[in-house]
Structures are given as C-alpha cells and as structure tokens.
Image (cartoon, rainbow, N blue to C red; front, side):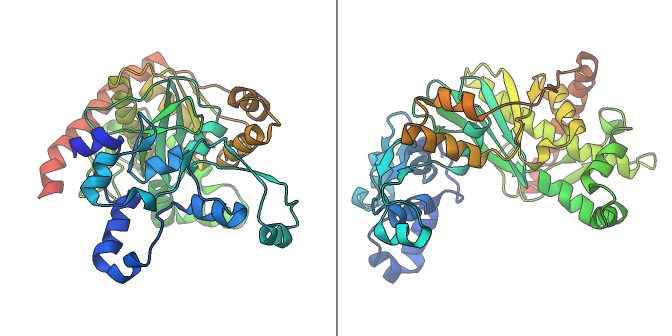
Amino acid sequence: PAAFYGAVGANLDSSHAVFKALWIRDEDPASWEATTHLMPPGSYVLRHVTGELRVDYSNASSLALLDPRTRAWSKEVLDAVDIDPDMLPPTDEGTAAIAGITPAFAEATGLAPSTVVAVGCGDEMAATLGAGVFAPGEVCDVVGTAEPVCAASAEPREDPTMLVECHPHADPDVWLLENPGFVSGGNLRWWRDQFAPIERDAESVGLGDAYDLLSREAGHVEPGSAGLVFLPCMQGAMAPEWNGAARGVFYGLTLAHTRDHMTRAILEGSAFALRDILDAMKNTGLDVARLTIVGGGAKGPLWRQIKADVTGLPVRVPSSIETTATGAAILAAVASGVRGSIVDAVDAFVSYRPDVHEPDPGTRDRYEDAYGRYRSVYDALRPVFNA
C-alpha cells in the first residue's frame, strides 16, 4: 500500500476506478478484449459532446493511475497492473478549451456549433473550487450523505498515515489533499428516519425542517454530550483510519442520557472525524487556516459552531452552499475567456455569508477531552472491528 500511495498519491482501495477495471478484466475477459479506452464518465460525456477524448488531471488522478507530482500517467503503476497506456485518454487542464461541439449535439440541444466546452474536473474538485477554496491552507468541508474534506496546497504532499490522498486540483497551479469522505449527513438522516418520527412527520406537513428541529433540541445539551461518544462508521471508517470493517457505535450511554444527547453526539462524532483529517493534513506540513463548509450539512448553525470549536478554525459558508455547479461554471468562464484567470472567476462567482463562526476558547478546551474519549473508544474497538 505504501509503495502504491507513493506512486500515485492514492490509497490501495477498491473505490478507485482502476480496481473496478481490473475486476472486469478478471471476471469478464470478453468485454475487456473489446475495450479500447478506459475513461471516467466525464471524459465519456466530453467525447460525445465535442468528439474529442481528454481527461483533466483531477479525474485522471481519481483513476489511481496518475502521478500527481508530474501530472503524467505513472509508468510504475501501469506496468504493475499491466494496463496499456494507449488505453488512457490524453490529459489536460480542467480550464482547457475545446472549440466547438459535434453537429449531432448542437442539433439535439440547440447550442451553437461554435460553443466552447471546458474539459472540466472531478465533482469534489468542482465543489471545492466553487467554494472559493484554492489558496494554500484553505479547506473545503463538503457535507452531504458523505463528507469529503479537501485542502488546497501549492505543492504535492504525502501523508505518512495515508489518511489523506494527494490529487491535482481543478486549478492547474494547485494540488488538493483529500479524504474522500466518511458517512456524515447519512448518519443524521438514518437517525431522523429511525428515531425522530415526530420531526420527520412535522416536516412532511410543512411544520419545519426535521434537521432544524433535532438540532434545536441538541443545542440544549452541553458540549461533549455528557460523556457520550458516537463513532460515525456506519459504512466503515475513513477517519481516523481507512477501515471498511469499522462500525458505528454509541459508547457511554447511561440512564441520564436523552435522545438530544444522542443527536448532539452524532454531530460531534462527525466533527471529531473532521479533526482527524485536518490533523493529518497539518502533519504533511500544510498550514491549515480556515474551514469553508458547503452542501446540505452547511445549513445548521449548531453543527458549524461545533466544527469551529472542535477544530479551532474559523468557519465560513458560501452564499450558495451547492458549489459544484459554481465550480464548473468557473472553469467554463476561464476556458471561454469570459474571465482571465481562476482568481478572477472566483472573485466574480463566489461570495460568503456574513456570519463567520469563530472557535469558542472555553468550549474548545472541553472538546479536547471529548476528542480524546472518541479516539480512545475507536482505538479500544479496533481489535473488535478487525476480528
């Protein structure tokens, strides 16, 4: 695993596309023999739209076949997995422009044949760019069902623990340290669906958002949830380590705990996993400065404040929390010449809400103890998970 990570900046994990391709080669050799190219979905769409086959550096890196330092296909890994480099698309910057679309696509959509198309980028890179995160030390926390965490870096970096991967960013001059995401909002949705029928039903008849109602109740609980710990590993762990065998846990329940304590513990558990990832980023030598939260999980002020207090970082939220489309628009603006640079496009497209969450020093001290409990519980259960 360490040698693979050193070559392509990615973990030896089946989530990466190369391993899915190798599975097809092993299990369906006839289909493999008929295959001429391996490409991510974005390249497939790009070819149908423009007639050209290309892949940007970020999507190429997600295949786990690209050396992020050189932004070239890794001969070492290609030789190891016995994949012909001619099967892979030419690589290019996400802001690269393709001048024109195919006649068939123009007729189907009504777009002009001369329409300029940007090569584009991966979804997490687009979400990060759309959040205005491209300066070194800025971190984007993408909170949906899962919670990818991405930090901008002026140079490629390696994490000795391999908790965070290194990929090229959508900005061609920047790299991204990334943890692909632990289950986060998905835990809260499970909690709502299984244990909050009143709040769920209230939302269904227009009497308030179920998550807002649950968070309001959890806000009455003191930081640390009275010693209750939640491990957000409902589909395995991505923090504090990559471990598909880990499972979700409530630890420390007593008769004094209420549902509100358990709700807050879920929010805090995700914040502790976020801190695991930020600590790994700092250990690469990156000076982590600020957290920008996007996605559906950015809506809750309690969760944002918990993350500020747990991480010790100021937290801001873009005016639009659905930033993936914004990131794609930024690339298109640069590719088409509407904007002269990534910086110019971000300034034009991205703004932030005025309510920045600053860490509360008193609460942060309490969260140091709570975080220590969280790590102790995970470490104690690791042998159980791996049995």
